[in-house]
Image 1 (cartoon, rainbow, N blue to C red):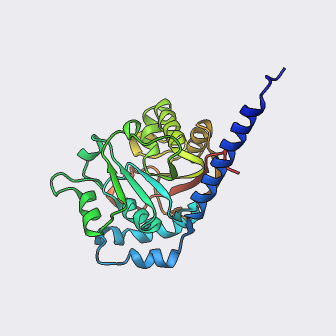
Image 2: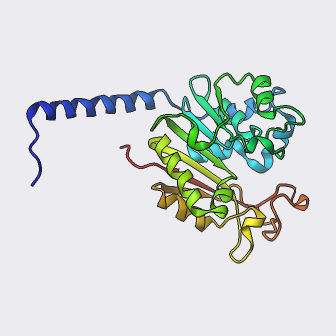
Length: 265
């Protein structure tokens, strides 16, 4: 038997649902469709690191964010932002009305490959300063300690890092994904990019993973896999080589997934 609800409680619940719906509408109203050409032009400026610009042909950031459905005005999290390649792109994409949180753990800051290089200065800070990325907020803490509230994000990018969590411990990957689920608003988007592995290879050593493993992990964490894309596919990749092998010149085959947190109408 269902519990009885008095008229005052019913009115209060209806009122709260109305407020929540209005807030969702207001949030959506402040977001605008991404302008791919404007973003592409913005990324060609001299205020952006030349090394990052040289990587755009392979990483296709404008096409990736268009596929994922990022919009201007969104609040985004760049998980393991490293040296800030995608932090810069996200900053320009969400615009002045949006916010980008660039997260790096203290341990991550010790690495220098595509990350903050302590021997040459703080690469991420340099990009933020040179690009005048005033909508970027750095979080140099573990993902579990960001201080961000529940459902506070519209968009999360997990680029080339899920394999490190999963290969070390699927349980650790699950914990990370559940934390992202907590942070993401209902209806929010997660983009997963990672290096494609092959069954039977030592993918942990090679820093790769199977797309099927990623799909199983994110589905188990509660996300809906809304779409995948071959935008970053590279048939010339040799999956028996480490992603850091100079012969690959960063040209790995990568999968791209768009996830959605259920709950929004």
